Length: 223
Image (tube, rainbow, N blue to C red):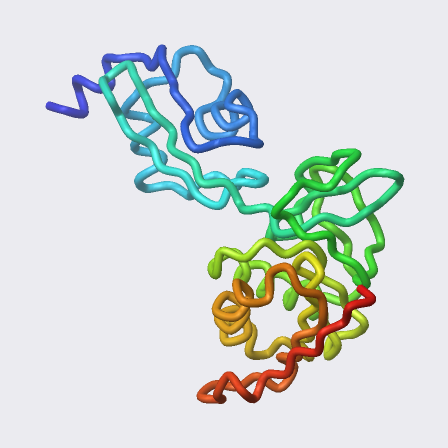
């Protein structure tokens, strides 16, 4: 009976919530399509038993039927994890490597990534990286920093085993960053004490159960 009632209604109102970068119309068209004779039951049946649409820059979405003719689309965008300077612009990309947008300046809270080689950089397409392992490490580092609520200014690769972060005037040596979750927790704990200072925090040997005294901070008044 419910299906019969829903099937007699056409959706005439669609709200999109949760999006900041992806246009609402692009999301609607990707999920619902441009057909004006969209039936509520057909759309919900397709979403329940079919495959979710793959939408660039969208991590996941769900549909809520607010009324037989009113549909709400709730989306979660892939977070931007970094940017690179390319052709006089900062190109911003998400954790999948999709280049979302460009700006002539760097946004606060999004790290500038240096040292990773790219073959091609095009908005709306995935980065063509020369070393997938480096990009995977970058994605892990960015996720750990975001989870620890840390704003990193730069992430610099001098190879897979030589990675450095910069937070203000503090440089953090990560080594190969294999213990990035532990390293992120340590940074979150000690960074408030280091604010206003300049120097290098060596966490390249950070391992679980090591005491804080094992981490070396070298002041550098010249930086």
